[in-house]
Every structure is written in structure tokens, then in C-alpha cells.
Amino acid sequence: MEELSHWIDGKEVKGTSGRFSDVMNPATGEVIARLPLATPAELDAAVRSAEKAQVGWAATNPQRRARVMMKFAQLIQDNMDALAELVSREHGKTLPDARGDVQRGLEVIEVCMGAPAMLKGEFTDNGGPGIDLYSMRQPLGVVAGITPFNFPAMIPLWKMGPALVSGNAMILKPSERVPSTSIMLAKLAQQAGLPDGVLQVVNGDKEIVDAILDHPTVQAVGFVGSTPIAQYIYGRAATNGKRAQCFGGAKNHMLIMPDADLDKAADALVGAGFGAAGERCMAISVAVPVGDKTADALIERLIPKIEKLKVGPYTAGEDVDFGPVITKAAQERIDRLIESGVDQGAKLVVDGRGLKIQGYENGFFCGPSLFDNVTRDMEIYKEEIFGPVLSTVRAQSYEDALNLVMDNDYGNGTAIYTADGDTARDFASRVNVGMVGINFPIPVPLSYYSFGGWKKSAFGDLNQYGPDAFRFYTKTKTVTARWFSGIKDGVALNFKAMD
Ligand code: NAD
Image 1 (tube, rainbow, N blue to C red):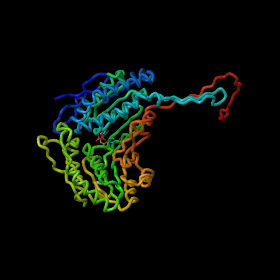
Image 2: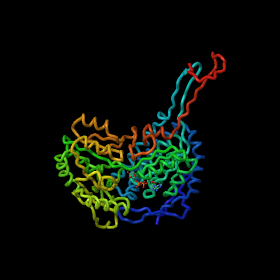
Image 3: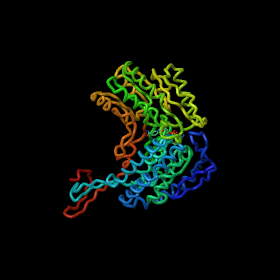
Image 4: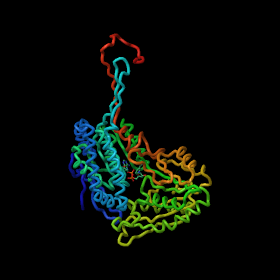
């Protein structure tokens, strides 16, 4: 059995705790590796050496740091297939989808090539007699990234790119279910010229996360994962005086207006609801057709498209639509939630339970399921299912549909399908959700915008990647400087305008 390592000071380091977790191949249900879970003492050693390495890295000029990003981006591109294979093996998503996972992370590294422009300060000449003011953005020091299982490449890259290019050192704690991609990315960053110690990958579970949150040297925590953990991490990090941005779960609705192109809407729902087995924080999990006529016509179109979906292991070829879910526990939870939907009176139109794939009988596969007549009080509506289950909540008017989204606890993404510009505009303006798609089902912003939900989908300040990320990973210092030629001496006790 392969035993994985941490990545400390530019090398693979075996764990010393004697505690391990199993890394599985979800398609076969087999344990493929043992992952060492770090102790607080191992974390402390990693933080101390990151702290030393950060000093030289912060003193490296921004262009040189950006050049490391440039080489890193090229190496990610060159190793795209190997990275995708690692993602698929531990996560289960199809290879094309795994390449997309790497690609959307790579695009953030590409933006980091232009970081010097983002890291510039401001200057005011002659703010008062002989007085100039300037501000600079300085790195925070040692920061941490704690990432979820569902994007093994993209989210670690979202964390490490902006943090590192801004001159910080990072302790990355990837999900214990998909650790290998982060180790490979750390090796590529080293090949790109990142000094040893500036990026440390420390594997572990709650014990190590708590140690990160309590470590006095760690200045900031960027977290992505489920809402209860995001809320917990935000609270503990903030209590300990750290800067924290913690992105959580989602329940994303798509409104389908009576004037929408229903074929396109149905295609979009199938892709956004079932891609990656529904294990995306931007998956559409609730379809909200407006009017019963729209709902009936939509369901009629969805059924054959959903029944045609091919579920299987990533090794079965590129015509597989989606793979298994991450664990047996996730598979059982999804089945239990479907059962609850049936018990609470929703209509199960396509039942994906009990799917067995020949040769992969122990894999964690769930077929696609579609519900109609779901209501707000049902568990399947309230819970983030994080599986291939699409719920339909029928709305009688646009205002009903909008209120449904507005009243939901989560606010990550949402979409509207319509042919009417006024309705689309009204929706984008009024909805209390962070990312909105107009005839676009998964509106993950491009890497030079930024990503973040509202309500219980995000705790803390500023979004991930884009200009916000450079603000999050730097602090502002403002200098007021006076030079005395032509200035009269004198004592000033009052706080007053400089001029
Ligand atoms: P998770 O919350 O279980 O785990 C995320 C990270 O937290 C992992 O590194 C894990 O080791 C750690 N962790 C887990 N339990 C912990 C605990 N009790 N104390 C401290 N640390 C703990 O999430 P997951 O299952 O890996 O990922 C899926 C979730 O992430 C979904 O809810 C999904 O919507 C969300 N997600 C959100 C975004 C976003 O940007 N908003 C993006 C991707 C995924």
C-alpha cells in the first residue's frame, strides 16, 4: 500500500504521528493509499520554516515572483494530463471534467503573472506643504489554505497563487480524500523556482485544522468547504485575531421563465445538475419553472436527457457523463435523502438509486435522480445534497420564484433562463446571491473577476481570486512624509487639515 507524504521544505516528508486516513478510488471502492495525518508539532515545524523562507521571498521583487508564476503556469499546462489523472483517480470525476478542474485553477495562476500591477501602492504628491503620501501593499507573512475534496486542483491553485505571488508563505491543508494533486502542484511550483519552505503541504484532519487556527504565526486562513465547517473555522480564526475568508456550501436555483428556450434550459439543467455527479458548489440543484405549463414542458424534456446519461468510472472512456460520488457514506446519505423526498410527498420522476456498474460493483455510484413537486419544507430542498439529484420547485409567478431564492439560506450561485432582458436585469439586480447567470447555468466568474457567495455560502470578507484575493493576502501601510525646504518651524498641537 502506497504511503503518502507531507511536502515540507521542498521535499516529501513521511508522517510521524502514526495516524493515517485512507485515500480511496471511489470508482472501485478500494483503498489506494494511506495518508499520514500531521500532529500539531509537525505543523509547528512547518510553520517555523515557512516563516523563515517567507522573509527572503517577500524581499524578492514582484516581477521575479510573477516570473515564478509564469513558469508554474507553463508546467501545469505541460502536466495537464498527469494532473487530471490524479484528480480523477482520487475524486472520481471524468477526465475531461478533471482537465477543466486543472484549467480553471491554471487561469488564476495566469492572472497572478500580472500581480505586480495589482500589488502597486498609491501616491499623492504634495498632500500638504512639503508632504507626500504613499501606500504600499505588504504580505501578511505565513497564511493557510484549507481546501475541500471536490476540486482537488482548482481550489488549491485559487489559494496558493494569489497568496504566494503577494509574498506570503502558505501552509496548504488539502482535503484528506484527494491529497495527491496538491503534492504534485507543490513539486511543480518548486520546479518553477518557488523557494523551498514558501509552500508547505501539511496533511491532516480536524486536529491539524484546529492547530492551524490556533497557531500564533498564521496570519490568515482561506477556507473552502461545507457551511458548518466554514462557520466554525471563521469563528475560531477570527477569535484568534486572524484574517479569515471561509466559503461554504450552496443550494443553487435556476429560474426558467415561460419565454425561455426550453430545450436550451433543459440541456443547461442536465449539465449543471449532474456534471461531476452534482458535487460542485455551483451545481444547480433546484429548477424553478414559472407556471405549470413551463414546468410540464420542462420535465418532459428533462426525462429523456437524464435517462440517457452514462455513469461510470473515469477509465471507461470520454463518453462517460459523470463518475461516482466521493465516499460510501456520501452515497448512502444521497439515497437516504431521496427516500425522505419520496416520504415527504415529492414526485420522484427519475430514480437513480441502486445503480450497479459491471466490474465496479463496490464503486460509490449514484444514478441521476429527478424530483418534481418539491416544496420548501422538504429535507431534499433544505439540505445541500451534493449528489446527482435535481429537485423541481414549481413557482406560480416570477415574484414567487425570486422570493424562493431570496428566502434560501444559501447564496452562492443562481441563474435565470429567459428571452426577456427586463426580467433578466431585474433578477440580477434584486437577487441576494453572489454569482448570477443569465442564460448561463454555472456562472463561475473568469479569473480576473472574483468568486464568492453571499448569506451562508461565505463568511468573512472579500472574494476568492481576482483583485479581491490580492487585497485579502496583503495589508496596506500608508506613509506620510514631509521634507522641510521652505516650511516654517513651529509646534502644532491641534489635529487639523494638512493644508
Ligand atoms: P468539508 O467541510 O467536509 O471539508 C473541507 C475541509 O475542512 C477539508 O480540508 C477537511 O479536512 C476540513 N474539515 C472537515 N471537517 C472538519 C472539522 N470538523 N474541523 C475542521 N476542519 C474540518 O467539505 P468537503 O466535503 O470536502 O467539500 C464539499 C463542500 O464544500 C460542499 O458543501 C461544497 O458546496 C463546498 N464547496 C464550496 C465552495 C465555495 O467556493 N463556496 C467551493 C467548493 C466546495
